[in-house]
Image 1: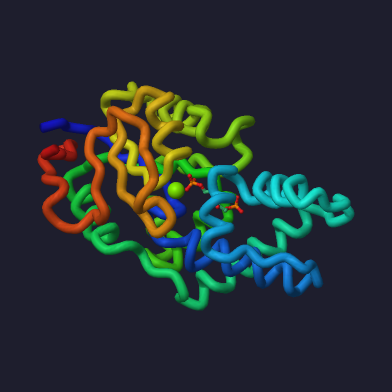
Image 2 (image 1 turned 60 degrees about the horizontal axis):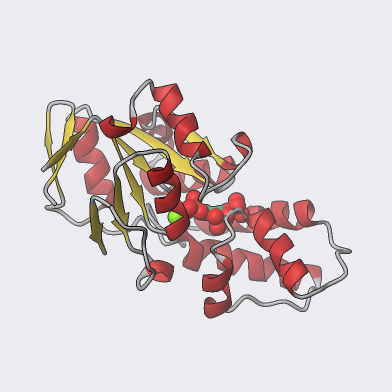
Length: 233
Ligand code: XBP
Ligand code: MG
């Protein structure tokens, strides 16, 4: 049994299947809109996901294709995120099973909540507001996202950034992550980590030493006491 004062959530793949249902769809719509002859099918996207960050992912693709880098990666990425926001606002992406209940119970017990993600900050706000309501952004006392740190996951930077702002030490927190890069980032920051596998990471070889490795955050994973999330693993 382990106890934690704070839960730090990854976003993409962990709170919702945003990679499969949102980002990949938005990248492809943007490629079509711009007239680029690219399409990231499910398998291609699964391989590309080990490059975290949408801008970095596009740049890697351009390098891998040995393509003349004539397109403006930043502009492409910005439009892709507009399309992503439209998908989210249209209600195309739901929270994963158990997430809403877990957050509700954690809040009721006074467990502190934060976010550590690679995605662009606006994507986090869009997802949280559309799935949990406008007030829900305030439930997360620190939101670490995107380019606020120099190195994205699997570097520990975003987790260290969040820890510093929460004034907590790593063992007081539990990171919830779905991907190898995310788990590596949290563990490199010495934070105990729970794996919640997602569409693209069902069969991924995760780093050794995670607290637990599950497929869904459905009821029964956590118990809560005053200010503590208790995990039976
Ligand atoms: C998320 C990412 C992001 C998203 C797309 O990783 O790597 O790049 O795929 O969002 P994690 P952006 O779940 O580990 O945080 O296009 O805004 O980068
Ligand atoms: Mg993730």
